[in-house]
Image (cartoon, rainbow, N blue to C red; front, side, top):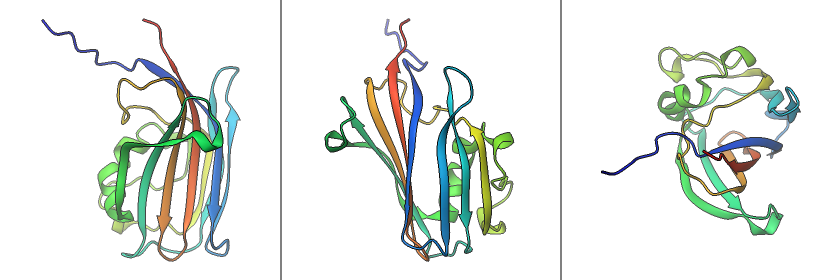
Length: 169
């Protein structure tokens, strides 16, 4: 008999949010990690998208890990979302990413196809906690960076820094 552990063997805490943009006239980012209670951090702030996504707007998600958290020690991991057109990304991954975020953000609720929606707006995040469902059940302890990279009319990125710890069972 083989036992398969189907639950997460780890938990995480958001430590910081880093961001960059090549054009603040088109994208202005102001996000931070914020305490929700003594033990939980979430994401708060704004993502001001001042252009409409086009067929040329691309997105990818990369993941890195470090045992120590030193800036020069992060290694690229195989977990990623490859570079793809942003509307296709939302059509594919929206439910997975925004499943539990509905009440903490005014990000459009996509019920049909992403191309049917306008994304040119100030998107608010208020103490958002994102679930870990899309990630593997087993990951080693350490520090992780998840980097979202968008390109097209403006190049910009968001990097969330997490600390991951094992759950003793």
